[in-house]
Amino acid sequence: MIEVKSISKSFDNIKAVQQISFNVKKGQIFGFLGPNGAGKSTTINMLNTLLEPDQGSIKIDGIDLSEDHEQCKLNIGVVPQEIALYDDLSAFENLKFWGGLYQIPKNELKERAEWAIKIVGLEDRKKDAVKTYSGGMKRRVNIAAAILHKPKILLLDEPTVGVDPQSRNHIFETIEQLNSEGMTIIYTTHYMEEAERLCDEIAIIDLGKIIAIGEIEELRKISGVRDKLIIHTSDKQEIEYECESIGSEISGILENHKSNGNEILSIDTHKANLESIFLKLTGKQLRD
Image 1: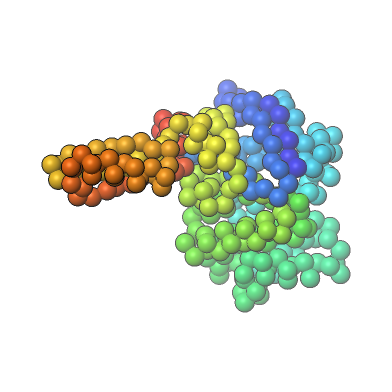
Image 2 (image 1 turned 135 degrees about the horizontal axis):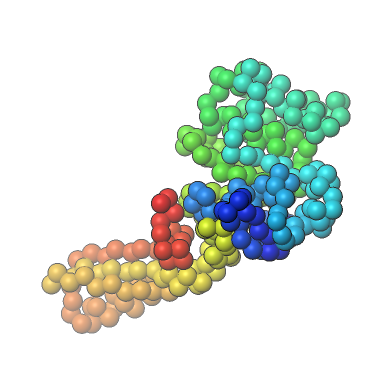
């Protein structure tokens, strides 16, 4: 669905993206995980034609982006970090405006706007001015505007920044619904719990380079991060084990301690997660 080969982008002396390559399969949710300034937005802006790569190639649904920008744009919906709405217009009026820019026929536009506003769960507020909306509600309208032309691919650039937990969860549910209906999604975030929940495959990006790419289990193998089991005994020892899988190894470890006569007071388990994987691969916490 998307093929990216060795793209780079610099701004003066700053190398924002350096020789990155990745493929996104049809129907996949593909995540870009990295801190602010890692190169996520620059990559998204090259995919959506706002920026032209200094080198490398991008294909969208088999079409070379450098050869046919307009056709590629028709296949893509974009949800930018910034809110792109008119505050004095209602949500429904905003959608009709953006739908006009997509050249959706007038006889279809009202139906499309109704469909999109329902997808994001704002039917009861569709006639209210956007200026009366919370930040999370505005972001949901942003998503509705991006899907009006029913694109094959949706690009979301940190769509939950600054939103309340309820709106964040609604955004997740919207993304999951669109994906279940066949839409391919690229999702950038610096929140690890979002990547873990949503993404089939994740590219960890930092300083403009992709450090590792794969499903969470593949990233775990690449990083070498393992589960940890910590046993606290009656003689005040704290014994730590590294495990490939706590679930399959814990019974053997506990039996070994019982046979040695060590009384176990408590057990702590630490499952290898995306945070520990990121830390191992980059040497720093994601929110640094």
